[in-house]
Amino acid sequence: MQYACVAATQEGARCRNFVEKPGEMCETCQELKTKGEEVKLAPSPDTILVKFNINPGWAQKFEEAGIPRKFPSEVILEEKHIAQAQQVNRDPYQLRNDIADSGSQVFGPKGASEVSIFQLLEELREKGYQPQGVHIRTRREKKFDVLVIPFAHGISEKNSTFLPEKALELLREFLRLSCWGFVHVWANSPEKGKIVHTVNLSHREPQKSPQWNLYFNHGLWAIEPL
Ligand SMILES: [Zn+2]
Image (cartoon, rainbow, N blue to C red; front, side):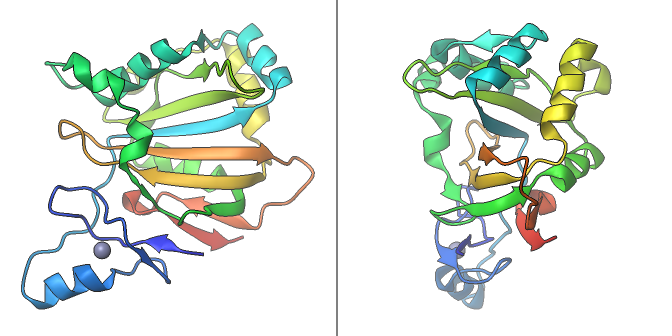
């Protein structure tokens, strides 16, 4: 597996070069450091969008339990809104960009496989990230929709998402014991000073035991054998 270099670029994004071992810096970044330039670690995100590919059965169950369904244009607005929640002035042209395109792939182009996110959810809670604006992203062109759980930093617990108990129960059932066939983590570039990371999960395999744990690791991300 490949890992994104852990250094930040001059612009404050995560370096896009890949290294062989987790936690390493690429040659370019190391060289800068050797020359005496300041090389910082890639920054921690303000928001993490945890996204799950869900089949029509799950989509229907979530919807019936009270999780709002959003359509593509609304979703972009919603995600921007979340990412820039602390922003007063909003630039309407920013809405046209798909935020997922600007980042680096933390676990290389192939991502990681057979992963559990159980530890990750605990870690996010401990580090002060709260779920806010949970929704179903409708994809008209594809069979599977996407369940999006945004985790925002620094919001109070009472401002986090209000979901009916039925929806919370269903979410717990969905997340319990899950082995995810494929995981891709994107560290996106800062936009107006805010950083959004995306965790894309697909192929939920309830019959399989996960082989790896996904860790937030201060926003640098890591996976370790279970
Ligand atoms: Zn680098």
